Amino acid sequence: MSHHIVEVKNLRHVYSDGTVALKDVSFIITHGESVGIIGANGAGKSTLLQHLNGSLEPTGGSIHIGHTPLSKGTLPDIRRTVGMVFQDPDDQLFMPTVFDDVAFGPLNLGYATADVEQRVTEVLELVGAGHLRDKPPYHLSGGEKKRVAIATVLSMSPDILVMDEPTNGLDPFARRQLMALMRDFEHTRIFTSHDLDMVMELCDRVIVLHEGEVRADGPAMEIFGNDKLLAECRLEKPLSMQGCPVCGGGPARVSRPHPPHHHHHHHG
Amino acid sequence: MASINKAVLDLKRLDLLANNDSVIHRLDARAKVLVTCVFILCIVSYDRYELSALFPFFIFPAVLIALAGLPPLFIAKKIALLCPFVLVVGIFNPVFDREVLVNLGPLGISGGWISFASIMVRSILTVGAAFILVGVTGFTAVCQALERLGMPQVFAVQLLFLYRYIFVLSEEGGRASRARELRSCGRKGLGIRSFSSMIGHLLLRTWQRAERIHMAMLARGFTGQFHAYRQSSFGKAELLFVLGWSALFVFLRINNVSRHLGTLITGLFT
Ligand SMILES: Nc1ncnc2c1ncn2[C@@H]1O[C@H](COP(=O)(O)OP(=O)(O)OP(=O)(O)O)[C@@H](O)[C@H]1O
Ligand SMILES: [Mg+2]
Image (tube, rainbow over all chains, first blue to last red; front, side, top):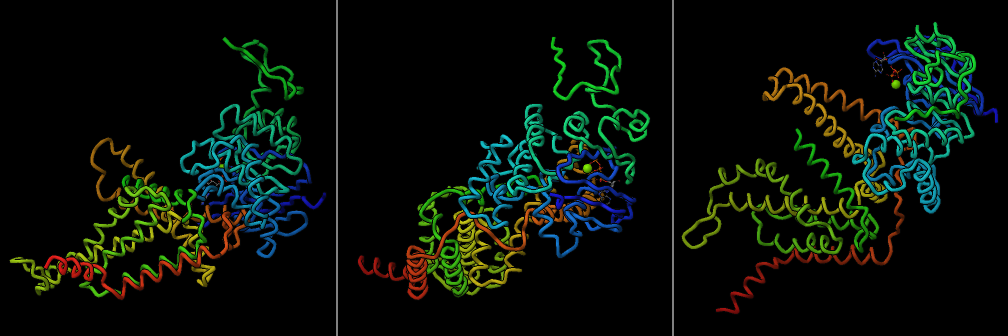
């Protein structure tokens, strides 16, 4: 299924106030890849993601989704392909109830009523928000909002999942739940995060943005092993790769960190 | 600002009421919109000095509230919120219009006071009917019904956005004023300068947020088409609902039932 390639070529974005958020960004993401985009605050991550479904218009450069150039005419199709979870869930929830909100997308896609009902129920269970279905979104906690926002996107069965800081504000259990969900998602995943452990666990590939430019692009191990690069981009190693202060071990095994499913348990 | 915020939250609660289930809720939205339109038309077509003929119309909101199980106190409070505005509109009538129209014993009531009361009652009736319509239908469904009744789609979508915009504005307003209050350390505000800059910020932020919400809607396949989850069709029940109420409204409009009733009762006792 090569048609879910995401190709960004020389993308440049200047905001109306003159801020150059993206200078010259290029990369190709093939189908099924799981890519983490990391970088300091203001590096341009959110700006970049918003280009992937045409929410922003490039100042320069181009974007292709599955060999289709992103333009006004192709926008509806592309938005069906690319599911986008915004950084601020308040921007994403606008219907009177959680159920209505999650049903909004499928209804727009023209699903039958019975299918919509089933789909919404399924997806809400999937993100652990089944009990919230009749609540108004503005009465939810931050993490609950986030989960519902993710459900609104999953309900449309996108081929490419784009998420801006998906685990931000989630409790540890919900975070684990979401990570499992993302691991099971078989299509392309692109997300930004300051949760470097999650990036480490879920991504084969990491793109480092720095001041609107791609500073590095490669396998997660390689990037997180490069201390100099991380320091320059205001980042640090994931905790799982740092020395464990309790065991007293130094930053050992940098080239071969703990396997993803190894967890430290130091209680008391 | 905080109280406005609360009022708007209550408005959202009104929308939420539309998710309840009742005979009225199950009716097709178009039927309810039509009846409400006829109702409002009848009310506003009255002469400015008309008062007694308006009272029988209260039967419509009363019956709907009862059948749909809406909280009457809540609706009443929402309407009361509007009273100050009506007061501003109507308060000059008694001042300018002093011609005595009705004599209650020694007390002469001027036309101004009567038209003022008439404006009050009419506002309560029309606004109440509109609130009830939203409460038993939901705003999205009302817009959708308007569109299916022939309103151009652009207008229907604009209406929906306007409605959402009120929420966005009030939320941003609530946040901004809270932030300002917290930082003014208990002093009553920080003067007009900080206030005006806050308003400026507020409008900008609201605009940006409305833009982002619009983006999120587009991202989820919104093409300007409404899709209500509750599918319904215009059947026998709807027809009966529309014809029944419309007939009653027209009848009440033509015959002043209060007066007839009045003459009937005074006739009985004399
Ligand atoms: N609407 C806007 N108008 C002007 N400048 C903006 C706008 N949105 C973002 N910027 C600027 O663009 C740059 C990149 O912002 P962006 O939101 O993409 O950062 P980010 O990498 O997502 O940061 P964070 O990790 O804090 O979410 C920042 O310098 C920011 O100030
Ligand atoms: Mg961001």
